[in-house]
Length: 240
View 1 (cartoon, rainbow, N blue to C red):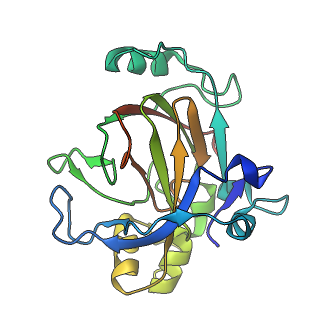
View 2 (view 1 turned 180 degrees about the vertical axis):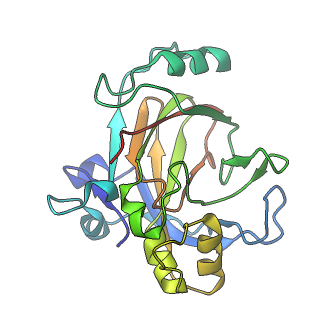
């Protein structure tokens, strides 16, 4: 099991989380490579038994915990893109419990299977990927900072999370040398070789967000099925 989810009662997440498989995008236009990893679309609701397998407890390393968060948004429902970006830049996202220097904002139209773009490659989508802000090698990867994200609205969106860490993935590929720098290419090779990966899809309404180890977990955003565009804001956490 790659990560653990912090929650109280299953009822609090029952209707927010689906689970499915992944595939490689192939000839779908708009992606940076045919090997990009995306949801296969075979979503079904996460069962209570499956949720318990993901549950975090006191033995879970903090660096592997995913936490769902909620806070009021300081914008009106009709706020435009610039107003939402400005609100994110001025926001203390967890009221003093998290660094408040904004890392980035990203806006996405409705209907995107995955949302992250490679701006150095013609704004092509990259699919599920691994962040590398801290660029820590395999042996130190668990010290990577987690990331806070908040849906600034107006539409809903999803967090996509793979259920294996990049250390699991590198180990399966024989790339678990201390000095190896884990990369999205490792994830793509792992899937191409037929190794297993399940994907969780967690719905985020405006004002909802997450804290997650995005340097450890395959992840992306999605607006598939959303009725309107949305903005997501990101903040990096404190050093581990």
